[in-house]
Image (tube, rainbow, N blue to C red; front, side, top):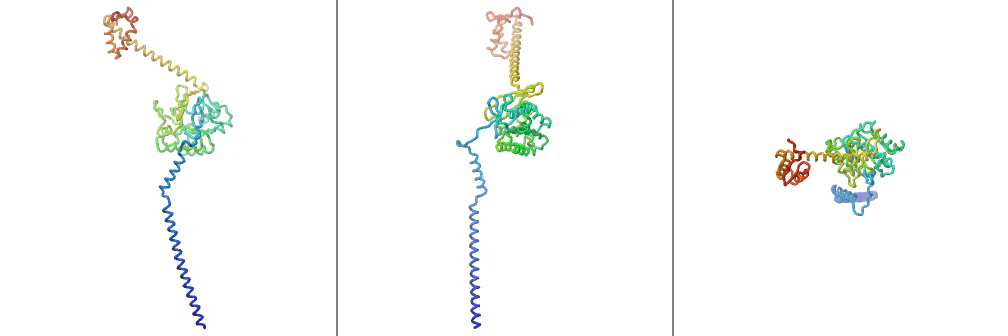
Length: 395
């Protein structure tokens, strides 16, 4: 009986082992199938995954879509920060240039602009903004001269100290390294949130104004900064040294002139500084002038410039008359000498040929000249020119 029972137990145990092994085999097969499905899924995803070039193409398409301007695109009109006689300049969301030879009044001109922004109007320069904040970064002058910027603006505007302090920030950055300047400007713009940024000495922001790569990068960054913060950035740069060359210096000047919405130039004639618009994407600003009076204050000089222009034109006309009279005298003296050399009389035709050859003049000009002096310097009878008693003097 025991043997039978043992056999039955052994058979049951064997069957269980077989079933267990079968389940184990079935599980292994299932895992393999699952792994196969996972691999196929990964391969399928990899096949369907866009390539790096396709991703770049899609990014470019999105960028082009965002920048596309159509007839239905709504854009804000230009918002100018200043105007002169109704003509706007220094628009927001853009960069601008101010140029001149050294010591020709760029900073003085910008003081007038700052006074107009803060006061509402200074001389013919009018603000188009309501109580704007102005950030002024000076990279060239020493601290006392930078302080004078504030002093002059207060004097022109008559504004209270608290108002100037809250609406105008002026930084003396002459001792800052060029590699730090852009970061300092970005920080100041982000903190102060100005509508206008004046960079008096943009050349200090690059190692060399002839470095094309740095110039392109700086001008691009300034454009982006002006748009991101909806401000106008006014950059000051010297022109080339040659008197006749009015282009801003180097690749930086070229790039700034190409990208700027407005470029103003200051020219100094004696004590008068005249500001004119040399480049503009829109209507050009009328000229205006300023100067320092006897007490060192900045004053309107439009009337002085007008008087100087009139005097210049009068002097120019006088020089022209004197030159013409000198030429006429030279011709007449030579004609009288020729007549006198011929014994006091000469055929008009002969005199005409002599004068044409000597002075290289046209026949019509010589004929008119001879006729002009008949009756005063000599007489003419039947085509014969004869000296008068006053002109018949031996040479």
